[in-house]
Length: 376
Image 1 (spheres, rainbow, N blue to C red):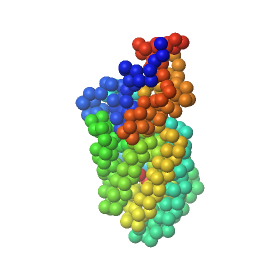
Image 2 (image 1 turned 180 degrees about the vertical axis):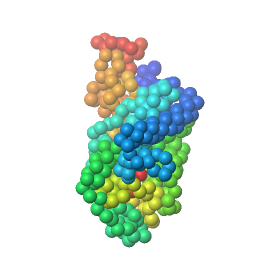
Image 3 (image 1 turned 90 degrees about the vertical axis):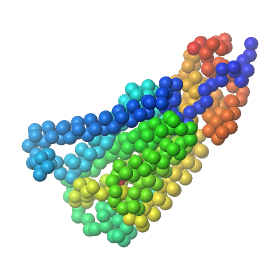
Image 4 (image 1 turned 30 degrees about the horizontal axis):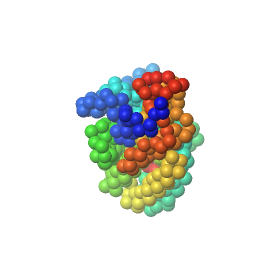
């Protein structure tokens, strides 16, 4: 008996990124709240752990003690401690997804159930020339616009090779984890926590952008607006590309370049100055860069067929593994992606010329297949 392409028990509808809290069917209205409380508690524990570790190391190494009673590590050491405390937020949100929402931690990364490393590489390649160009333009701006090598508009003094190399090593090691951790918290956890209650992504995208800007402190109204735009662009790219790769790529390149340059300037790494302190001219340059990056990434995602919805697990595609003893063929993957893209556009078109019953492998089985520039 030949199965029809429209089975009685259809595949579950594909989930967009912001709705992945429903991936396992265990969602309850209180789980995002419990998870958010766990994230906040975990962030506090991480910060205290880094502080205590620094104090213990300072006592062992006989570091000087400052007026506040804490050991002094200098600009490089204290910046490294701050970056490390932020980097530890990634395992915190992973645990929140596992424990509070009872779902795989990889669903925070993308609709594929994990980071799509090749796609992340493409995003890094797109971000690098754009961020370099915008940073170069900002260095040429007048002092009132936040120009200058260190972004403060004033003169810059060479840090010296020992401090530069040490600071650069610290930046290269910690910044990728710090920047990606911020993406996991704001574009990952917060977007999916709010998205668990809302079908449209916008109620999830706007609050995270505002909170992202507020987390960087208040500098100038223009700087705050720039951070909001960054948060919105990163959030839209996350939903439109089905994962955090585009946001992580931009954030990592931006912070690596900004803090790498700061490492060459004496005392710049110790500065509390961030994108929140940008002036309107610098913000204008940055917003143009952000819009250009978004346009290029979205175009590239369309050309490369980047999945924007979670494919049904029974199809065995997008790195989720096969079910029923086999993985879907390449033709079936293409048809399933076509179906998911159509569903995302509001046209739920079933895959054509494809035996869906054989892939779902539930009670319906076929013979031969087994069952069930300033850093941000």
